[in-house]
Image (cartoon, rainbow, N blue to C red; front, side, top):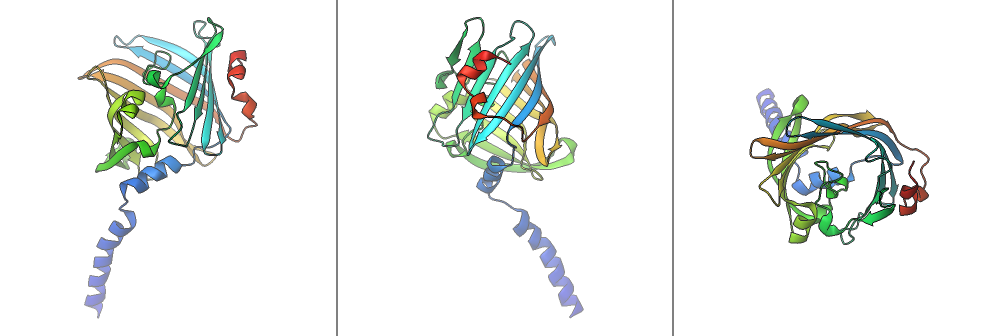
Length: 265
């Protein structure tokens, strides 16, 4: 009886981890999409632009975000230096995959807001390595997914590497990526790294969340790096440092309108 019980215990120890922890790729993707990212958020950003020679430019920004049901409204104000001061960006990130996200960029020199067309969303956001499309969450229904392998990433965290490919040319054109590999941490379902294959120029973009922690119980990215590479050479890089993150602030929907961003902070 003891031998039989021992064999059964050993068998269970081999089988249970597989049954409990193996997940379908769409289960993982849905958990990433549904992850609690907070509401009514304020934060301070530093954007560091780094050219191929290592020269840096520093920008200071203030960001606000608020949920409207499953939609996310975000506004970003550029505070300094003077050449970008009072520039502002507004995004309505819709959960409905049939609805294109709305984005506007206010340029104080022109004293008017420009609506970002879908065909322009793959372009650089204010000279950074992030595109306008990167400033929104992709709709999971627009892609096909495949688990490539499991690995360990920075800090020894276990992660899935998931291949994500657009279903249509429209999505390729909008985001500018023909394929992406996303690295999802198993413990918190955060996308910690990504490799994006660009539609043009034989280039790739490498994203890495280099710092994250829990704030009010919400896993929050505090530093994100995006590098654009052609072959082995980095052509440009952007570092976003996020600080003074506060959730559950008293934000109103009136704070997220084109008229409001045109007034500045």
